[in-house]
Every structure is written in C-alpha cells, then in structure tokens.
Length: 476
Image 1 (tube, one colour):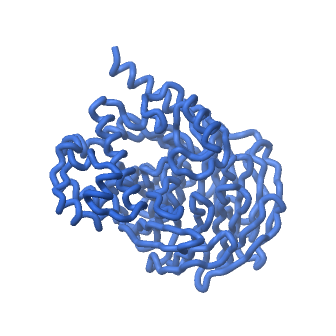
Image 2 (tube, rainbow, N blue to C red):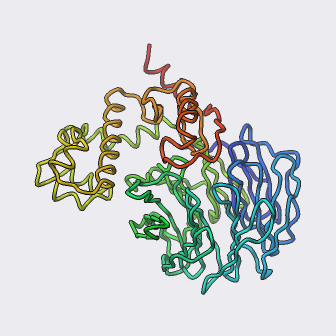
Image 3 (tube, rainbow, N blue to C red):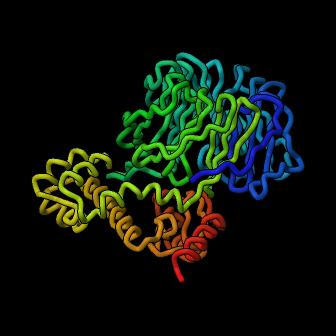
C-alpha cells in the first residue's frame, strides 16, 4: 500500500520540518539551513541550500502558489524566500526577539503567522512585509499553528497544552486545554466535514502532544453564529509523545510521527490504522503530504527525510474491504443504518430512523421530500447534510458494483477520468469538466463550495498512470 521510494540525507543535524508545494519539497534543520528538492526526481535545486539563519531553523512552509517559502528560527526571525531563484525577499523580526518556533501562510497568501517561544503570535502582511497584528497566549511557548481552509480563523498550540483560536483580526475566540503535557502540532483537513445553515461550515482538526495521543476535533465558525470547538475522538496508536501530524490533501488519511520512531497512517473516516512505518532510527519530528499526489515526507532526528508513495489501487481496496464484507448498503439492517448515522455525527436522528424502520434499501431511496414530510426533520441544514451523506453512499455502491475505484471517478461527471487534473482546492477532476465548471460557476470548488484560490489546473500524472494500470488489468 505504501513504499519508501527515496531517502534524502543532506542535512548535517536533526530535521525539524518538511513541506510540499505542487512541484517542490522543502526541508529545514538544526544545521541552520533550508533545502529545496524537485518532486520530479528529488534532486536538490541549484540554489539550495538556503542560508541566512544563525541558529536552528524550526519550521518552513510554502505559500499556496508555491512561489514563496517562509522559514523561522531560534534567531528570532521569519524569512521569506523566492523559491524560483533562492533570493531572500524579506527578514521579519519577531517584536520580542524571541525564538520563532512555527510559521504558516493563510490560504489566500495575504498573511503569515509566526509563533514564538515567549507566547507571542504575529500576523504579518506578506505584500508589505509589515507587522499587521500581534497577540500572545497566557502561558507557554507557541509551537503549533494551522489556518482553517477558508482562512477565517487560525489555531495555535502551546507547550502548556492549550489550543487557542484567533480570527483574521487577531481576536482570541476560544482557548481550551487539549493535551495535558503540551501540544506539539496541529493540522486542519482541507475537506469540510459538512455545510449547514447560514453558511456554517465544519472542519476537522487534529492535534497531537506529549501525552502520546492524537486528538480529533470538529470546528465550526461564522461571524454570525460564532465559534465552536468540539472534541470528537482520540487516536492512541503511539506509545511515546507524538511530535507531528498531517492530513492528506483529500482529507481521507491522517498521518502522525512519534518519539517511538514510528509513523502511523490512519483512515480518517473509520479512524483505523492503515499502516505503521518504522524505517527511521530516531524520533520522527515532522510529516507532510503533498498537495496534489499521494506522496508523504517524514523527517527525523536521524538527519534524514524519507519519501513514501501510496499505491492508489491498494489503498482504495483497503478502504472498501469493510464495505465488501458487510455487503452493499442496500442490504444494511436497521441497526447498520443506526451505526452509519452515528459515524456521520448524526446520532440525534437514530430514534427517528428506527421509528420509521429505515433499513439500507429505504435509506438509499430517501429524498428531501420524504425527509421533511415522512420523517419530519424540520431543519433544512440537517436534511441537506443527510442527503449529501446518502449521495456519498450511492456513489460508493455504484463504485463497488462497477468495480471502479472511487478515486478514479470525477466528482463532477461521476465518470472514469481520462485526463485528471488537480484544482487549487486539492481535488482531482476531469480536465474538461472542471474547466467548464470554473467558467460557469464563478470559480468555486465543486467539493467545498469555497472560492478557489487559483484557476490553475495541474495535470495529475500519478493518478492518470494508476487509472491506465487499472484499465489494462480490468478491461480487455
């Protein structure tokens, strides 16, 4: 399902962070350098390594377009680099001069956050390189930061274990003790869990910490209804502090790296462990998924970065095994439907569905009219959510019965893709279909309904090769 395809061993000390753009991989280290590699063949770029920092580089991240790289260091600075030529664009000094532990770009590239050891967090204007807003947490060092996919808020994590939520004006919306022994990393899934009434969106957030746990949270925020952070579950696969976590670009996988030297890959829908990777010889400090292909990079105190590639067909088969064992959805019992509702965070509807004897066949035949008139579900947002989940089930049934892996089907046309491309929302589509969509739908994502950061479409060669391999073996 996943194999090690390359190992980078150019750093002279612990690797602290790695990050992907659509075409590059960046790594940074205690050795004070940042290195850049081409994803085509993993060769180091001519202008790499990037040198300026006088102490350890703790974090690096690409702007969404990939044209700018940010790095931050114990020397109290956050530096912006031109990725095409390695030119230094700006040096932004933390106002307190404290060591900067983490930096992240906003989804629209306009802002950059930097969090420091003294608890200060700065929001920088990327166009002017000037300080826009500044705040601080009550206790501990800031060691983690993540922007929501829609950019309306961001979350920071501290060494004292607090998750703090800030809006785009740097106002503190919420603070909560998440990990007793301190947070080490947090990361949002780019795929919303669901949409509700009044534009309410729900996002999945993962946090990890010194307590050896990965926690999953559901986050919602609108300027009208306010902010809510709800604990969902705990993943306890590691036996030592967890130092890093990251979602795949499609939100279907979550990976974590630990002091126990292992990397665990989870299926986010079932929270089952898909794979455990144990090739690093010291603590795993960082992990990152590529934004457009099934590539994973992991860095370690063993001074190496490992590049892993997922087998798309095998991964799809692993995810569908449980469905195949339980037969198709139309054969579900009423109890199976109740279990499904709970898994979709719809447990409040279990009683209604049981009262109306909804089994798998009835479930697939539900319409917006029957939800309102027969089941008496008054909330428009709740009815919309149920219908979306049912449509996902119908798609899975169609995929399983046809034998076509769902990852090969265009989300717009629901047909096998011939020329898959990646849009700026991270999803793959049939090229002609997404081009037509963008021209007619004012450049919104078909999957998230959010505005696409860019109209650029990138060929997904890895997916196209997987589709071609599948066609060769399944069609004569």
